[in-house]
Length: 179
Length: 155
Image 1 (cartoon, each protein chain N blue to C red):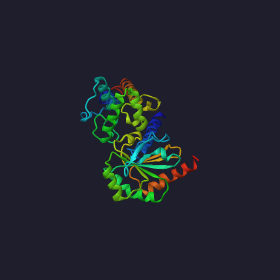
Image 2: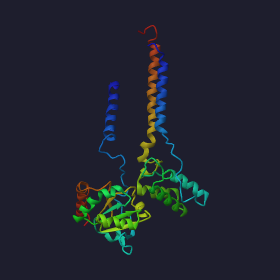
Image 3: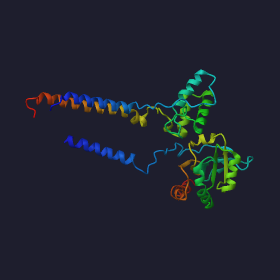
Image 4: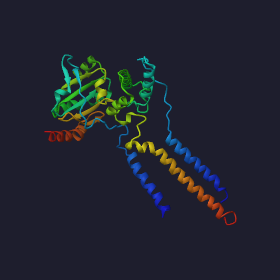
């Protein structure tokens, strides 16, 4: 009995392990953000386009908003830019940019040439705010609910499909939730 | 049975041990320390702690390097963060907490032993025990066989 059962159990165990481990749709580099469900780290920075203008997430409290981390040195950020512009034209939620370890002039130029999808663009020259948010690669896009909690983090270039599939339902739920 | 049974079990035992050893102590010999342009900390005690802490923190951009070894921008920033926290008198634990609160458990090369990391820490020992049981059973089986059906009763 054991002679048959043990190898069979081992076989089933391996199948389960491989089904998980070798699943092609699983991104082995994706890391769950410990920030999910926690209050979004506060920041108070200046705007890329206007150094005299303050950008802070305290001003956004009570609103569902998106924070998009980008930089001019980040190639995939350019890739997602068109999608961000299209999404911003749909006026679903405010999109706040976090310009990460960049140069103000370059960032300005980028926005002037390619268009500006952001309501405000925080200028995080030394990367301190990015560390607070657990950013490790751009582009990253965070969704924050009305209570100021991070409810979703997406790493990789944004596309309209991802927006429709991953963000819209969560935004709707966040709006229904906290009154 | 022409070959002595003992030979086989020795080979199996050695293989099992090698496997268990490989799983338990898989060590990557990383390249030498990245060039840190910010220089040494004044206090040699702090410098030692700085080196130990940054060796235990994973650089998330190049996931198999520690932030001590990496020259990625983020690693440079995180080293600076660690340095400032040390100078500010923060404990090792609070520095690790700071990092795991932002980047998750994955940021640590040596996660603390706690219920949810028990499998990681326990797996090599489980493998060793499992291998030991298998070896024991095989050896006992073979040695009994060689006694019971010796040359006389063999084919």
